[in-house]
Image (cartoon, rainbow, N blue to C red; front, top):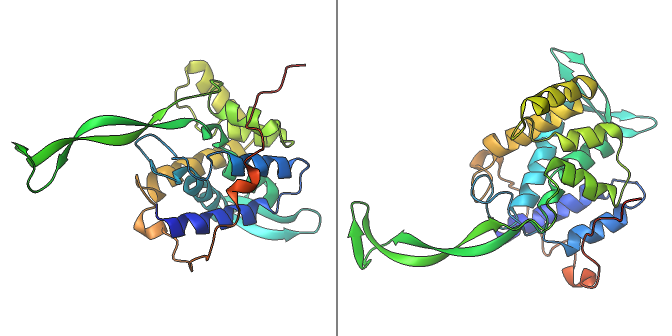
Length: 256
């Protein structure tokens, strides 16, 4: 991910989150800016396993989610999204709900990855060794590994973390909790996932958007060419990280 793309992504992320009016959003954004959210990868070795991959993935999910919806003006809620199935509107969601669920569904990945090193064959002209693949040398190369500081699951961990800062509706909680679908879920999890879709359609819409972003929009180190941002360069990032250096990192609340 190049620096210009990351700067554009930060500005777009902050523009969208600026439309959230819920109490606590300022504290949430302070946490985001102080954390590694804008620098972290989206995965260890799969989709967007690169610096700033998590930021790009979050925006991709938002675009995939809203791209399937008719966005219209509502007198009470402002912009709302209306997903259609076979031409019929099946639900309505305030834009705020779409922004929150898409952009923060993977907040659990903050402070989640670390950089480690391994020995790897690097093929290059003039390498000191040779195998059927050509000349190579063994080199120490960096890779991303998981270091989970808060082992509380995945979707449920994102719900927990967000709830420390802002109120989530029940449908938002369900959608974020189940955005991975039935991955790593046993028979009971499969039943619960399907039951959640029946109760809250956003569960399926967010899950599908996450899968579309991961599989269709993203490579390991950038978006696929069709989905790369061709917008103008930004002169500078939309925030100054040093401003938040003294802010505390996330800590789980004491149960009451």
